[in-house]
Image (cartoon, rainbow, N blue to C red; front, top):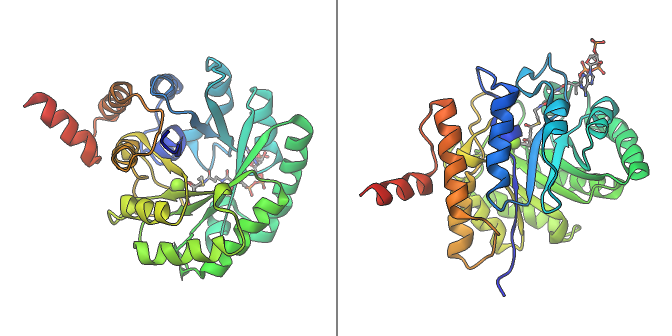
Length: 300
Ligand code: HMG
Ligand code: MG
């Protein structure tokens, strides 16, 4: 049997959080309903953050509450603090994600506190989550470069990741936030992390600003990583990382993983349908090479 690689679809969150014109709640919901038909098992549905900071993610809890429940799909919401966690829990969310960075400057710009202070807030979230039987994922941004500080030491990435795991996160996703890293650098980050952390609790989250995301996924696979975040139609960016482009597209990730013999559970027709719909809603060309080749060969 083929080895399974878990894909965490972050399109409805990372993908839409930076749109100039925020999508309506109904448009965001339509995207998630499309994604629910694709066989994807993990979908990040939005963020319970301040609507003053990220208006694109406003009312993610209300959106979440409207979603049909499916025992095969694990939804999650980003929650930077207890206030966000409580909104997610009230909406019925069973998994949340806390997020910090390996860079002090990025943490300050993104969530308005130091790394240590972010952990103080997460301690409250993790305690409440434990009491409520809710899973918590962790994110560490700037796994290679920070838009404000430049290169980040791999040892620092490993330290922050381990701290999240020790605190009770079940998995930590390393964000290559600005998409500048080449595979040789990603390799060094995984080496530092894998010296103290088991590969089964690590995930890769690669942005594609310089076209390196799929190469970085490949590098990570070679080092034993089996969980990747991606966005349908390569949507995405971070409001606090100017110029950073979208995540690796779920379509390209699907193609790489299938070609290498990994199982993903994805239904290709449904994936392409979701990808075409959101590209039409945003009125934007899809940057995924696979999606473009798929439609070209179909229309030929
Ligand atoms: P703050 O201003 O320091 O918060 O913001 P505060 O505790 O001082 O409260 C100020 C106001 O915010 C208060 O309201 C709070 O109630 C409210 P007021 O009394 O002024 O009316 N507030 C909240 N409202 C809604 N939900 C909440 C919440 N908390 C406080 N959870 C805060 C701190 C974290 C809230 C803010 O900085 C924020 O919302 N930041 C947004 C961060 C964000 O969403 N960034 C993008 C996601 S991370 C990312 O993209 C990277 C990733 O993809 C990986 C990678 O690529 O590297 C994950
Ligand atoms: Mg991201």
